[in-house]
Length: 444
Image (cartoon, rainbow, N blue to C red; front, top):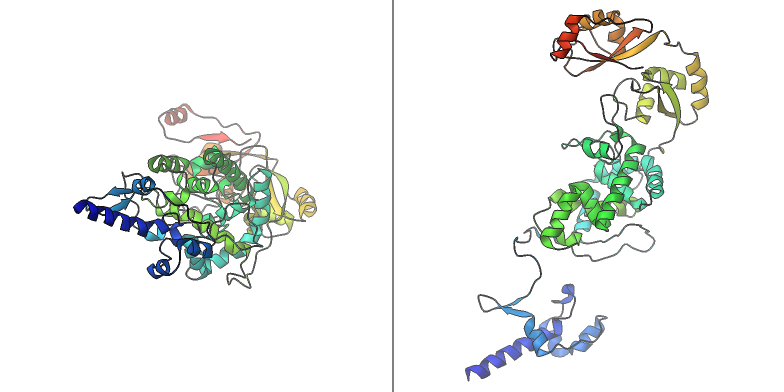
């Protein structure tokens, strides 16, 4: 009798489960019990645009279940058991919709709940800052897209810079990442960006985009997936590789279900997609009357090392602020001292007037320049006496006041007559050997 009852219960469970075993996850609970009673399974599937149900054998159905400790049937899973899924249900990101026709993208676009969340966030809470980002975007997007295309990358990767910095060359993060593509110093130098006392090419919109293109290409070669490449750009490729190994999946959305990746990395891709959706069609998303900035247009001219930016501005008949705006990588008031010349950006259409005016400006042929690194115990007076120059030119060239104290490691520019020879005494050389005293190096 007990055996007959057990078989009856099993057949009842089987008849209940069979109609839904092959339905997609989002449709499993869509059909109510009354639907199942009133209509056949095949009719329900036909109405939903699904193919006729493929019946499972008893052995196939039985294999889908394992006995749970409580005796309740439990569905098998291939997910790793060493760590529980993240309890934050908002991170559950199942691909759902596709962008509407007319919106062309060259990167994968999935519109799920997390993407919709950030679209709504940018439309409401983050509306003010996103409006500023959009206004700045037209200044940089055209030439950045062109550079990405030149390196064989999807142009829509440009929207990574939108969420990285809002296209702000001066953006600086808590992790000391800088520039529109937010490179940390190590990665920036690895991909050819110069970072020193004089320049920070992470802030150069053109050079940093080229570096980002090289880095993203390497990431894509590693992951063969733009979502994973973008996540690797944010968290580091090692972090993503470890996550893939840990959870045995190459699906970015699957990785977001677990605690291993930081929230910032989990949100990085949906933010990028949301930003791309809005930037491609801002009016549709409620962003109207945006005061877009003018495109980043310029010409290049070559100037000598240690050229005062005021001289460049004067020759261009423009402001120092505009010269600085076109050259955000310059950290000081002049071009860097290393090398014979420096290519500087000037306003578009100003090259002819610059060449004419710059040639007429007073030359500095009577001087050579040295760079001096301030050490413990240095004073402005002692530095001037060592180089046998007046104190005032040092103050003017380095924008210093007499009352301002020097800081260890500061770089000073010293104008030295070209025919002057700096004699270093034995005591000076001994002080240098001991780690103190005055040190200098020639600039040209």
